[in-house]
Amino acid sequence: MKEIKNIVFDLGGVIVDLDIRTCIMAFDQLGIKPKDITLEELSRTGIPKDWEMVHLMHAMDVGEMDTREFIDIMLASTTPGTTEQQIADAFNSIIRLPRQRLEWLQELKQHYRLFLLSNLSPLHWEETQQQAARLGIPIESCFHQTFLSYQLRMVKPDPRIFQHLIATTGVVPEETLYIDDLPANIAAGKAAGLVAHKIDCNMLDAEMPKLFPEIFYK
Image 1: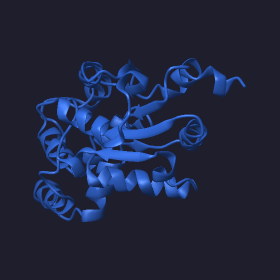
Image 2: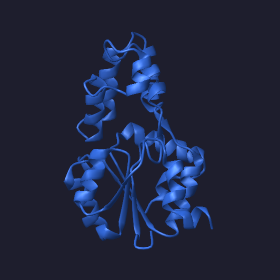
Image 3: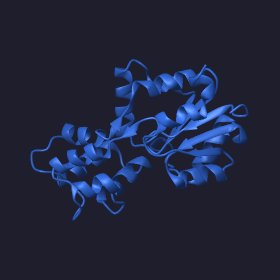
Image 4: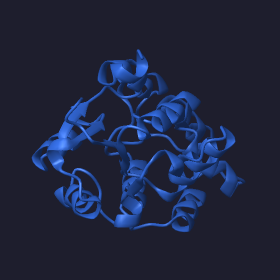
């Protein structure tokens, strides 16, 4: 990693773990679930791309739908009596942020320029901020700059979002490590010239010592 001066992290499945099963169960209790798919199948295969919830999440990620609109749609689809807070809690139950990830980022920030590049809804960003605050380490303090899809109105793997990050930060792509868990995003990162490294979802703990042994074994 001697040639690397910058690191770009994805959020979901990388910095934060994604607890898909808990999220699905929470929405199931509110009366929303993918049709003709059992909870056991969902826990193995993840959320199907043709589920309406996926389309709503994408609309939020790209900034085409705000939190108020999302809550209103969910209220019309959930069991009568469901509250706005229950919907927000169910949606945010997918987020799990371990304190050690924040500590690692703070350590890395002393040696590299760190950036966050994430397809993210405002609800999930607020939840991440709140979890980090409860852990005593503000998430913004871990990065030199954040690039969030709902603010930029662009989502990975759109090449424009990578070019925007490069142009805004002035990083040299060949000196910039990009870490993500989705193959399409990795391919787009490589096409932008970044040193892209794919990890498996929720497996950052296993990858960090391999990527940065000088920090973990000092």
